[in-house]
Length: 241
Image 1 (tube, one colour):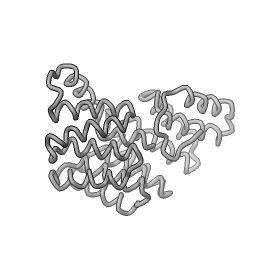
Image 2 (tube, rainbow, N blue to C red):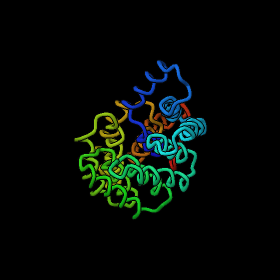
Image 3 (cartoon, rainbow, N blue to C red):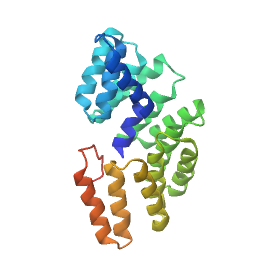
């Protein structure tokens, strides 16, 4: 589910603002301009170009927190997890009460298999912001990855109650956790709700195919897998068809 996690770097609201700012900006050498460009490029999964944009922003202001966060997300998207940690850590040092780089540090740590450290980051973020739905969903996903499916469902339910913009990811998390507990009928309902909100999410389509296959609904599973191949290329993390 890495594609979904990377987009935590910039919410849909932030991306909408980035589009408007990029279209209206007449100065192409400010931190705002380069940060907006970077956000748009991350949204398009153009991580190398996004990295260049954020580096341009940091040449202007090496302490710009938004650029450091964006640079970390671009590096993580390129699989350069250790380097992304350095960028997130610098953002945290500059803005220690900002939950966003702490959450994204947790994502990078999780990608490195450092699950205990990742959990500490999510818990730290939740200490700062107990109603942060993204932190709750990432904590839920980590619990699922570790086989703690009841804990995953509890955290996912809290995220679902809070989130609006990133709700699809939380619905998917609860779905796969339910499937891991053998509750496939309930699971497919949550997966379908996720796809209603984010129909172009390749990873969720893979999850749907996997659950349908486990239910013996093989023709529907194959149709879900075929859908993945029709969608734009995305970073599928450890997921595959």
